[in-house]
Length: 147
Image (tube, rainbow, N blue to C red; front, side):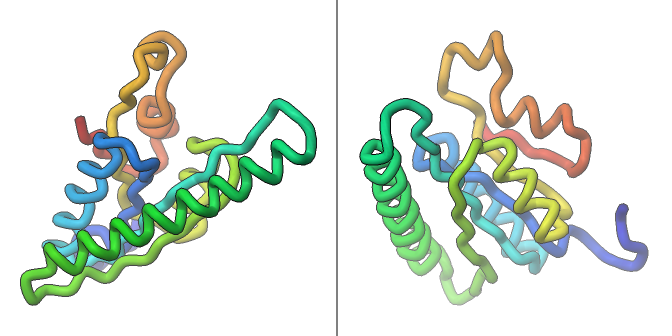
């Protein structure tokens, strides 16, 4: 449900996973947020290990936390370099799970007005659908897919 009396998006959610496409999406979303005066919510969903025992699950969870910390550090450095005297309001969110479900959950919870996502770099997604295609098909927010 859109609110009356607002100009532009108040909250823009961008999904990142460290790929070139997702980092381009983050840069694009940051530019939108800066120009619109929006809050930029950067979301990284840590993949969950589905095979193996408890030890594998612990190792996957630790790797996910480390990847999240590294992504947040990279984004912070990029934001500082690109600020040129203008601050972008942004926050970093991370959770474990499946990328589509995690982005949807965060977008709903944050009451996102727009979602930005990088195009999939995996060839198989042409046949089974990517996170970007699933977000567009959900039809719940304007979705921008960045190549």
